[in-house]
Length: 237
Image (tube, rainbow, N blue to C red; front, top):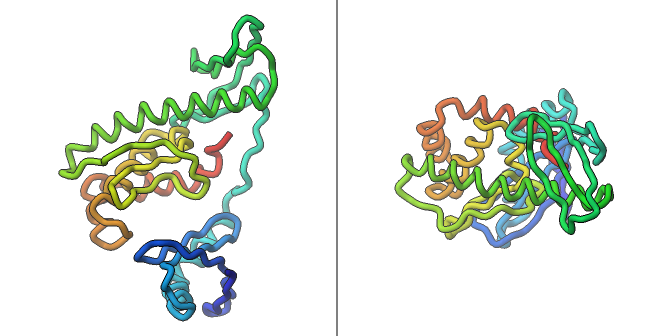
């Protein structure tokens, strides 16, 4: 469902998605996409009121997108192409070996080295994605373990998922779900994503209590969050 609301001199058009949840969530994505996820029993008046309430924040987000290159980077799977891992860029080097059945990916001496039995771009892309997924599971699990000292609740599971619109989430059962692309972020930004979701084990919303808990673990979380806002669009294949 599409709705509109006037906020000052700005007309805000937004999409409404109903879901089984208790609170409303507003997401603003480049270049000017506004999405409201609302409880199934929420009325149109309640949704519009929530958007008006967050109008200043929404306009600020839209304004910030005008000053950043939000267009996703279209990468080619050829020698010399650049790919991110933990905030650094590494060039791609492709080799062929007709004897191997599955492509092999490794990070060696500042390069992503992919060996496959042919140079089919889709095969190489899938191999790269699987490498990122495996690394995400390994590194994120280690960092959750590291930050566990700050929490007395423990996540029930840690899962790496395909999540186009978010870096992570925490379910009602305290399962931590992470977008596999997170592993492209630099380490302190990745830690922000991880601690953010661990704080959701206590607060499922973004209340003042939630942000206070996050700040108690990562006092500089706003700097880390800003990096994601500026560079997150580059974190894709």
